[in-house]
Length: 122
Image (cartoon, rainbow, N blue to C red; front, side, top):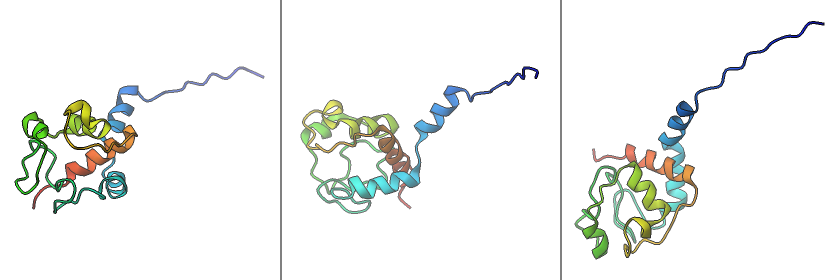
């Protein structure tokens, strides 16, 4: 019997990471309703502010919601990085912000960010 040579081709790691970092909006919607909807709604203020249109908005700009002074003064603009950091550890990005809940899984945070990106005012 002869020796057979096999050549394996792996996907570049950067391509795989880029796809993972983008997140999945459908899974993000499921995570949002499982983990976030207890305090947040898309279109009404609850214990937390409404979140439709949050992506790209400066923090503490919904006039009907009473934000902490820390969040009002933060100047944070909600983009993929800041939202991910916020869900991972709100106190780390804005100390004394009044939000204490965390989403511990990075994949869930990325998916929620992807979902929030799809929600704009129409």
